[in-house]
Structure formats: structure tokens, C-alpha cells
Amino acid sequence: MAHGADYYVPAGVLGAAVLAKLPALLRGWRSPAVRAVNLLLLLPCAGFILSSAPTVTAVNRLTGVSNLSALLVHCVMSAYACASLVLLDYWRGGSGEDARTLQRVRVWKAGCCVVIVALVVFFALGDVPVERPGDFDTYYASTPFIREMLVLYLLAYVAAGVATTSVCGNWILDIRRRTAHEPKTAVDGSLRIGLLVMVVAALGNIVFGSFKLTAIAARWTGRDWDALNDGLAPLMSASGMMIGVGLLVPAYGPGLIDRVWNPLLALTALRPLWRLVRRPGSTPRNAVFLRPPWYAGPEQVLLYRMTTIHDWMLELCAHCTDEVREAAYRRAKDGGTPEREAVAAGFAAMFTAAADTRTRTSPPPATDGSGHAVAALHAAQADDRDLLVSISRALVPGPARSGRQTESPHGRGPARGTDTNPPVPAA
Image (cartoon, rainbow, N blue to C red; front, top):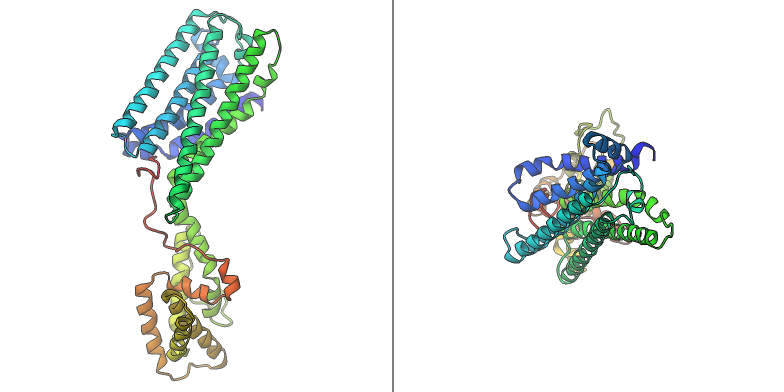
């Protein structure tokens, strides 16, 4: 891309993630895990900006030090590799106060400081008079001290990628072993996806470092394998953005599932009941139902839809016969159906019969069953807040229903935020 856009675009994505998580940082700045998350997004953002050719030229001219931007990039990315390992230790340890976690974190930080100090020393001792914004690594591959700086940086970067891959891979295996014996939750699924994304990004970083090392080594033998170095910009961009995605998925995934995905599934599951209880011939002008505002999210749309369905069901109760519900309930129980599904089957049969009656009779017939039907509906809803979804599923024939199971529209509990402890990583 022209004018460094291949670096500025991923920097913009990571910068947006930093801004999105800034409130969580301000609320939880005392938490080392929260600081590590934001640092892990901020460092590659700075690295991408400093790596672009326009920024390299601007930094060199501003400071008067040729190729200083290359040193800054190497230091920033070394700190980024360290921050990723520190964050994984905090997540995996479950607490920033765990003794073994703190010990590992101190080791990573000490190693990072040693590497950065060594990079600065090597750069100061080396001679890099010619500005090389695009091929600094291969151009100075044989320059004394700069050669050592490049090799140290790339070896540390590859080692951090290997360690990240190992930690994430082992964690994924632990989740798989645990969920084989326990119910899988939205937290487990989001964390596993985030770890998989980070594994792919870490593998990309390993390939990036290995290719650069190969191109540098080729220069030592008089060969020109600079193409390995020149074609790495897209890989760096993809890996950087994937790191951001891998961090955001575990932090925001459970909330998105509870607040977006499950309500959308519930809206789909409610369609049969919506069609059943809706008044015949109703149009948007004469239909009586609440309309959610245009800016409403899936949760609010679901609330409006369930409220409307419930009101129409109460009106339909004027045509209901409670004996139909009881008979269908007993048949379902005799057939071995679980209690919750049997209750839903009873109501589904009752409202189906009532809808058929409504199309043949107007006004509603005089019946004593309507009061019993309303009372039974209220009692069942007190025991099962997802009763409407259960009734709607019961309206679908068995083979079609088997492939359309959805999560509870209310989720498994309050949506997870960005300041929770593992297994939802701190944000």
C-alpha cells in the first residue's frame, strides 16, 4: 500500500481497541492484568506507526539520529512480546497475587529489560549513517554490533512467539479436557476462540521472525534473499490485528453472546408462536403491538416481541379450553417427555385449538375455560421465564425442532464485562 497504509490501518484498528477499553483501564488501573491488556494493544499500535516509512523519515529528521526509528520499533516490539507473556500468566494464574505467577512475571520483565538495554547498547556502538526506512534489517545485516542487535531482537521475538503458542495451546487443551466432563459455557467458548486466534497470531510472529533471520543470514553468505524480508508487511499487519481480536473476544464474547446472539436465536425461535397468536387479517395499521425504537438492540427487540406475544396470547385465551391443555400435557408425560417440555406441549395444543376456533367464531364463545387458561399461563410463566420460547418450539414438528435448539433468551446470568477475572480475561 502507498504511504505506509499497510502499517497505519492495523495501527488504527488497535488504537480503536485501546480507546474502547480506556474506561475499563481507568476503572481498574490498579489491576496488573488490566494494565497488561491495554499495554498489549498499545505497544503493537505504536510499533506499526513507527514502522511505516513516513514515520521513520519523520522521526529520523526530528531527532537528527539516522535510523533511530528502527531501534524504537525493536524495543517496542520486544516489550510487546514480553507483555503478551505477562498477560497470559496473569490470566492463567487467575490472580495477580499468586506467588508463582508473580515470579514468572518478574522473569519475563527482567528478560525484556535485558534485551532492550542490549539493543540500545548495540545500536549506540554500531554505525548506521544511511537511512533505510524499508530494508534496515537486511541492509545492515553484516554491520558490526547492528548485526548482533538484529539477531538478538529476532531471537527474542521468535522465542516469545513460541512461548505464547505453547501457553495458549496448553490452555486450550485444558479447556477441552474440562468441558468434556462439565457443561460448556459461553465463557469457555469465547476464551477458547480468543486463545486460538492468539495462537495463529503467535505463529505468524514466529514465521515473521524466522524469515527475517533467514534473510539476514543469507546476507552473511553473500546471497540476496531480501524478498523474504520485503514481503512481510502483510503478515505483520494481519498478526497485529489478530492479536487485538484475540484479546477482545474473551473479554467481550460472553456479553455479545448473552446480549446479541441468544436474543437473535430467541427471536427466530418465537416465529411459530408469533404467527399463531397474531390476529387474522391484522396489518401494521390495526395490529396492536409494541414497536421497539429504531435504535433498539436485540435484547430490547426481544422484550417487545415477547410482550406483544404475551398480550395476544391473553386475548386468545377467550377461545381456550383448559381441558385441551391438560389432555395434551398428560399425553406428553405418558410419552416420557420432560416436565418443562410437557407443559409447553400442553399450552401449544391449547393455543393451536384456540386459534382454529377464533377463525371460525366471532365474537368469542362463552366458556369457563378462559379464566383457567389465563391462570395456568401465569402460573407456568412464574416457574419458567422462557415459557414462550418453549411453547413456540413445541409448535414445530419434532424432526424440524431437533435442529433448532437455542439458548435461553435470558442467557446464563449477567453478561460478563471487561473487568472480570479469568476464565474471562481481565480487560
